[in-house]
Structures are given as C-alpha cells and as structure tokens.
Length: 94
Image (cartoon, rainbow, N blue to C red):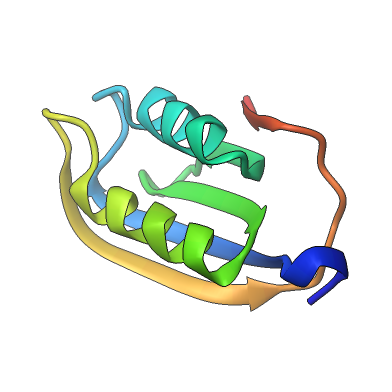
C-alpha cells in the first residue's frame, strides 16, 4: 500500500486474449477508472496487466478482465499483489 490507500496488482489473463483487441479493451477500462499501469502481450499467448489503484478499483478491473472484449475467450485470470512502482497514466506496452 502507499499514499491514498492505493496498491499495485499484477494480472495474467489466459485464453484467447491476443489478436482480439484485449489490450485496447483493458486500456480503455483502466483509463476510465483512473488507474495507472500497463497492459502487454506475453510470449506464451497470455496478457499481463499491471495496475495501481484502490482495492475497489482493482476489483472492478478484475471483473472486466474476466469479461474481456467481444471476441475474447478468457479462461483464467491470475492475480497477485506487487511492489509499488509509480506510473503516470495507463498504456499499452509493446
């Protein structure tokens, strides 16, 4: 935890989550929630999301990760708390 009750969490989303607009979906969701962090594709076909926000905001994001965009098929979302790293805004990492 750090100032303002914010915390960092890392998610790894598995299933059909690459090539279906998943990163753009996550970017829009996270930005609308005011989260900081990033989303990126991993070599194993999963998507990594690293986000900073309140517990409530992160729970809402996790719900959206399970949903995904229209063409995604989410089969699993692993999550764990992470050490705080300061990010400004939320973006797609390549």
